[in-house]
Amino acid sequence: MSFSTSEITQYADFATRLAEAARAQTLPRVRTGLEVSNKAGVDFDPVTDADREAERAMREIISKTYPAHAIIGEEFGETQGEGPWRWVLDPIDGTRAFVCGVPSWTTLIALEYKERPVLGLIDQPYTDERWIAANGATRFRHSDMERACRISGVDDLSVARISTTDPRPRPAGYISDEEAAAFARLAGETRLARFSMDAYAYALLAHGELDLVVEAGLSHHDYATLVPVVVGAGGVITNWSGAPVGSDARGETVAAATPALHAAALKVLAG
Image (cartoon, rainbow, N blue to C red; front, side):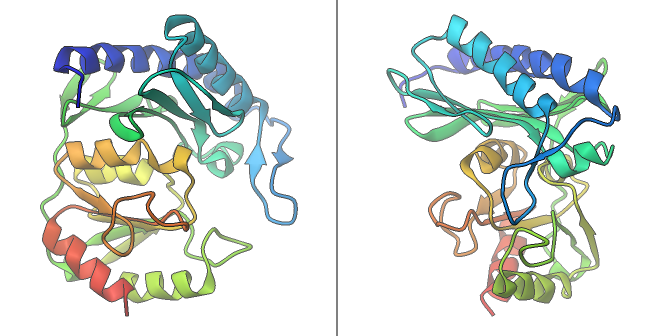
């Protein structure tokens, strides 16, 4: 790769600036009874002014500061760029949580170099928590405190804490009947399961508070940030076949605290 540590550090600082711009749009709208639109037709994929305005604010800053960089965003699609750099934005990951007033939604910001994520930021404005992955390490910031993130080290499936956003099959959830059955089989092998946390669950895995996060049906703007955050904390993340995230058409992820736990989860998912 042809970029330096100092360059990525500079971009990490810039990603923090983007997160602050998104906060300025999302926080004033939390628990205000926003009007909710449905993007998905028959299914329910909510969007609000907070989603749109937060992404618009971040895009404007990127375009002014790095006009040659490409952008992919959930709300406004792809803007072509010149060169190897591309920003991936999800202004509110977990809009369902947002419209219910649950502080598990996050803003996701990733930077890719030649389509490979090299920087990731997960921001939860309401609780003032931020995870930043850059130069192979993930750090957590809360108010004035900052520290390195490390995964739990759990390698035994029987004591693992597992999460997925919604274990129900479509149209109520995000996954197919077969995927729901596979997840239920895996969750049955673990000690504890928690749901409805979206990308916040991956942040907690990096924090050492969860051990497994398994999902499907994710889009590029959902998973681009997750890879550097999980790996930077010492974890493992692939699709359900053990291939790189994004290499399948189903948007699958298996994020685990250790290689042994990851291998055990893949085996159960495969049936």
